[in-house]
Length: 118
Image (cartoon, rainbow, N blue to C red):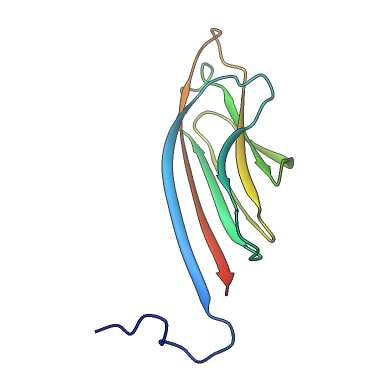
């Protein structure tokens, strides 16, 4: 049986969490959709992956924001996937842009790992 709270005598214990979900993304007019926010004082590092399963030439692109700032060059077109590893993640968001005709959407899979010590 597990002894909760008495499992380690080390000063810091590492935690690794992973999340994965799919959103339906359209053009957000430059406004990021909040996907995750850190409400703790922990320094969280991790890897974020975005997979745009939209139709090429029709669906919008998906751009990543971290800590309220666009991640330079991280634009995922329909049929593409990208990942990035970052330090000190406090929030994750995504921005949809474009799509033809107007109102087109894409199924975008977002997955990320969160690694921290407490």
